Length: 178
Image: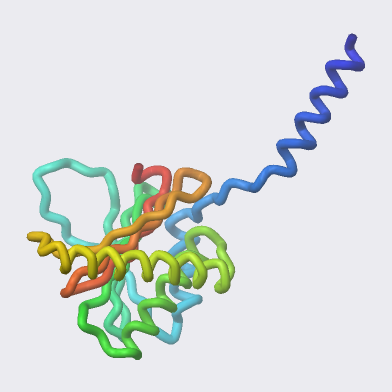
């Protein structure tokens, strides 16, 4: 009987080892270092944000600025990644759009360790969906004209992309932000 239980346990371990791994999100310190290095040519700078709110929060919020018209906000709870939000104003020229796409890709590598091709594939699909939803919103005559799409990744990580006539926003929400 003991041999049978051992065989079943080993078979289960082998099956679970072959399952797709859950993505672990980086710590805030690791994320900021990787974002600075990955987008060093964009002049990434972090500064402590001043947040005015009626609700109490234990999150540390940082403004992220670049020299390429892409801005962001990073929220952390201690060294735990909570949320990253990158923005670019619309309409934007081709250079700004390219910089925004690259910044998103670098953020995904910094947060989730994704390679450039995986990031580009996911972002291309999300961008196409958001623009399609934006056009549909315009055609319907919605009061708030916007397109939004989201992806849910293993490890309780969510990605979002919103498009309006005035800006585009890319969001990574870690498990602590859910």
